[in-house]
Image (cartoon, rainbow over the protein chains, first blue to last red):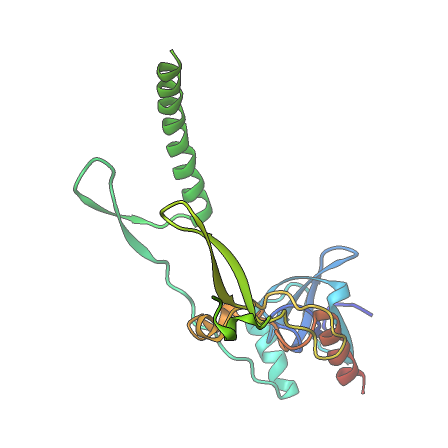
Length: 133
Length: 88
């Protein structure tokens, strides 16, 4: 049932109720979909296959999927590409404002957090030791 | 003495500690109950239970999940609905 080009309806998530096409089969359970949904991998259990099968190649780009959907009569909305945000970051200890490219948020936050508590902990330990003595 | 209107159970009794150290009785309003699914009556997740003033000042995305029928139907019932509409 689930094959490359099969038209499906997504059942779960923010894209539920929208039509999509199977672009590539990754696994027994996972499948790459594209269409009016976001282009991402999806669990087969979250798809309801329809009777139609579109004529697309395995692993085709988003533009090919857009053309295939036009033949059906469905026009896919084009999403604007987000530009990379360049945020000015203040350097520690200096009053200069340096402009750096924003790295993935998670790594930065983890790096900052790992720096701060280490310093604080050593200070606290010294204080408590002094107070006990 | 207690004001007559506070004897009703629509107000909740809150024991609060005053700055002077004594414990006094205050009366507060109750929060609304949890939201339930429109079909199967299970408790819905992602819907906060707050009084109208707080709900009005929350952004829309904080009051319901980002899913079709979010805040109205539970995900099971929503799946059934979509399946039935597709298979018909």
